[in-house]
Image 1 (cartoon, rainbow, N blue to C red):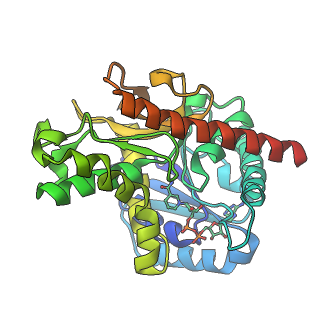
Image 2: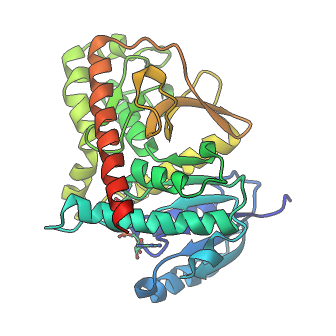
Image 3: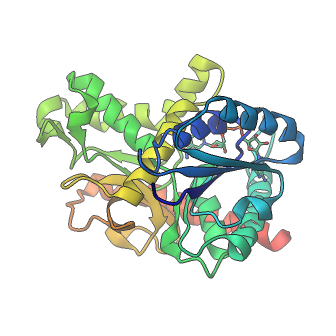
Length: 329
Ligand code: NAI
């Protein structure tokens, strides 16, 4: 068997962490032949709950799980990691100003960047899940200058999978036959779920759905607001689908996307498709040999260009707010 890879999960005592650790231990992120050592980080108030998660992982007797490091020490957590899924963050609570939440997260991601710089492998692949995911990833990138920017990504795969799920339900087609939806921009309600290049059973999605009013209206708002709908239904935010999508993101990044398939990832923008540069923007990407590349040459109609601009503007504005917060630290 290959040497075990070290996979860090931050916020591991939280809801997503509880769903994610077992998936990674089952091989959902790195494949069924790759042993893993889980590094689990949470903060002091969650120490006991984190120990409970560690105990359950031991009790699950996973064949691929070669060890568990459960810690509240950020340096120990980042030490020697190959993959990091950063789920830990400060949630927005009722009555909190947007800037206060941003400020808390900026300080967390700045500190984690320092630990990553010092203790992580330069080749480590990093996925930021915690919100505001794109901007947290940007702060991490800017404060870990020795880590190649291409190694730092943000999760929009849940939104991508939600788009595939909606097309699947609408057309009565198994989700495995629905491909190439795109989430553009920010993991927020300004994201643009685009079906103009999507296919259902090999045919253009618009031809199969035969309802442009739905695709340009209700479909988009359903995907954008799915997170709120889950909270309303469950009384808790999406955790199993977030965990599953995080594994999809890492698996495709490490093992490659199938021929003819692209997926959505938040990556450092090079200005493709008129997106603002130097923000973490969700693009359609393909991956090969552990590297992603933005799919080029897709036609963007005028309406789509406008929607890309809206979500891009929001990311530029979030970046400015984050920089204000950094300056105040
Ligand atoms: P949760 O509140 O259940 O868990 C978060 C955990 O992070 C807690 O155990 C907390 O103690 C820990 N934590 C806080 N600060 C930390 C730090 N500095 N270092 C390490 N751990 C820390 O929240 P849940 O439901 O697991 O969600 C986690 C995050 O994921 C939230 O920010 C949420 O908004 C985000 N999210 C992102 C999605 C995406 O598609 N990108 C989808 C769903 C959730």
